Amino acid sequence: MSEKRILLASLLKPINDTRLYEKLALSLNKLPATTVHVAGYVAPVPTGAPASIRFHPIFRFRRLSWGRAKAQLAFYRLLLQVKPHLLIVSTHELLAVSWVYCRLHPCQLVYDLQENYALNLRAQQNYPPLLRQLMAATVRGTEQALAAKVAHFLVAESAYFRELPFLKSRTTLIENKYKPAPNYTLPATPRTMPDQRSLRLLFSGTIAELYGVFEAIELATQLHKQDPNTTLTIIGYCARPDTLARLREQIRGKPFITLIGGEKLVPHQQILELIKQSNIGLLPYLPNASTFSCVPTKLYEYMAYALPIVIQENPLWQPIIAAADAGISIDFRKINAAAIKNSLHERTFYRKGIPPAIFWETEEQKLLAAITSLQN
Image (cartoon, rainbow, N blue to C red; front, side):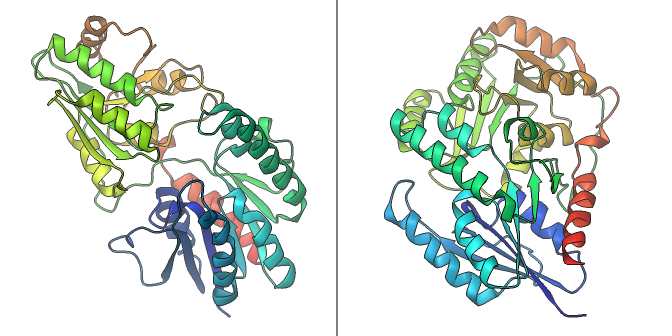
């Protein structure tokens, strides 16, 4: 059997990204006679990575710079070097150059649709209004124009089937469920929060205003007034210097709040260790069209470690939380610290254990089936 080469590529995600490497690459590495390559933003090669997975940290640029455009050339050079039989791209910006390569070489193109990129650009405040609209139109136009050329779509959220008209066939839903770390064991359940136990709050993952980092600070500050032993750890990467500067200003003089990461990427394993050490996980997402219909990846991570959760009210998330007794839903814009504290201490969490449906295993089976069908 001849060797098959699969190249996974993302322009914006680091080579050690949770979905790109830990989920997709490690799962695809189980296919026989297959070599997996991972291309992405510059980051350390994951510790303990299998020798059969090759890493290509070829992207490094500022958000708005010519380096982002030059990355297309670097990527095409990599394609000529690796000569993949199957190309899985996780960024809309790599679609056009990937299509050109696949048209000229015996290679199939798979689009790992992790986000509704056009909606994100319109709904989030990362760029000036006119630029947002122009970028969103360009992204949607590119996706629609090349959709017929894509052999298969991996879709991270079920909502995208409603939002994206080009997802009519050749699709597989691959959600961002939790893939257990090598040393993972099911935590003891149920969980309670005795009155004498101080709250160790955690905000993990991408640090951004949209994801409610400032609401997390406000909640921790209010709870600290109720119990001076309350702490908050914020761990993750912040892409916007203005947001990071504001964050540091807000936590100045608050020794009960710790920031880890900030301008630096944080290894996923370090985040998982902090999940195990904390006793409350915060998901204070601000209501926004770009996130309203998506399930946060860290919701699955927190549940996998039986971490009680305080989450923003949302009709998609609340049933997940309620079914697992995983936490409470509140409006982070109307914080009542005393009521939240009492609710956390009075409840019993995860009375039925950890729901099996939150784990990656079922997604891996769907992924391998989809990719195997393309290779045959």
